[in-house]
Length: 161
Image (cartoon, rainbow, N blue to C red; front, top):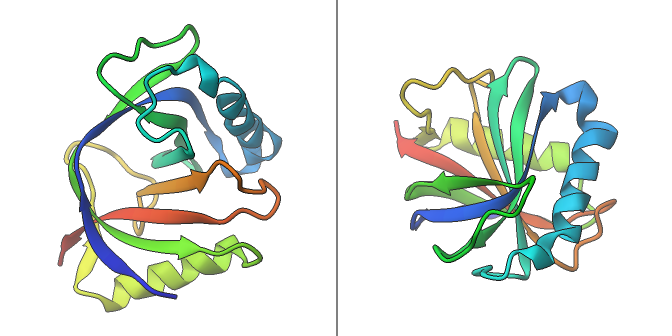
């Protein structure tokens, strides 16, 4: 698996938010992700319409908050029932999860890479995270992905140790 360090500019995203425990992921989170994809046409000012973002923040005990969103321009209004999130400019460790591979293994390998590297996961000041190793995970899903066997890019915000 290859890893690279990239800095992405800040951006605005709009879509649906889910918050819950790991036990509630199936089917709850999958339904929210599907609903966000179904409602994507309501977002007229998508920056990259071919990519749905999954932004996870481990701020829930035994779970996380997940934003199933699309990057949008300033002109985009927030449709009813949707939320917006602003993502600051961050430096990320980026890798790809290939189709046909185990997602858990991808994250295990990523965790090992972080442990061995000169980087550590970013922790925002004043935020109480429940995951001490990778409290923020951003996944970029191509529109043509199979939800039962996904391929996607993983971005974990990092800082030098």
